Image (tube, rainbow, N blue to C red; front, side):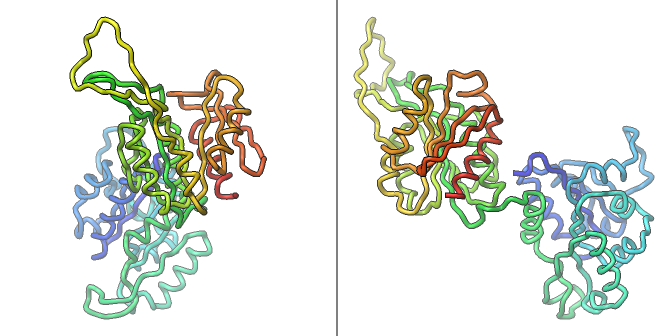
Length: 394
């Protein structure tokens, strides 16, 4: 979800330091590259080793520590970041940043960055309501800093009032909104199928196809990037399935995929059939390896998953794929109608740069209202976004 994003978490000295551990963990689980910079006081609450383990990166806290590689560390971290999160942000660091003071690794890094800065205040209520702190926050807001308001409750000092740092889940959600601004699938559930199914011949052989699952996995990733919940029903795939996908259902045969998909239709807003299920299965499968000199297999038709979904989908929108080498558009339009689909993504797999087990694709998107869209040669990630654009607009 955040594979190409660099997030710098700036941790200052307050009891809420422990919450920053959960934030760093959540960012890492979303595949972000996370660096942590700490003040000396923060190191008294949580050891740098904790953040090094969670982030899988060295922690920066000492301006003058010996370096294995020459670089101005605070500048390199500042340039690298797509987003800086100060969590917790004490009154001390808020006031220093507003005044332009840079007297340690954290403040020098923050003053050097041009990235978006998200500030998560945590302090005693009286400090938060102090006029000086209020003016400092107003100054930083005018410079483009964004603040997540602290919560109200029991504080570490025993007082009850406003000043509790917001929870890691809230900070993470706002970070996603900043880093992934297109969030039009929030509140939507999308079921995506990916990969090839396998139909057994005997104990060691099977019938399958060349599908790698790359297109389906890219669609699943794009849905997550845009705020949706994803159910990925995956046959055999060579593509890496990210750990942040909400639900992964692994299947083997076309019947397995049929059962997994049809049983979930009514829970979904969209179903995107990007898998390549086998159309036929062997009528009689043997447990032992067949050793006959001549072998004849009798094949029977597998259930049609897309057609079954089309018959019961109701308000759910259905997108299907059509991979052909001849008469692509004609066959794609036939499939659109016969499956009662809302969209068909037509691929001429004979074209260079399209088809199975490559990172690019060339497609014609045909909608049920008759409108078409040519993708040209694009990455499968780019095509995934085009598909989602068209589906959400229907």
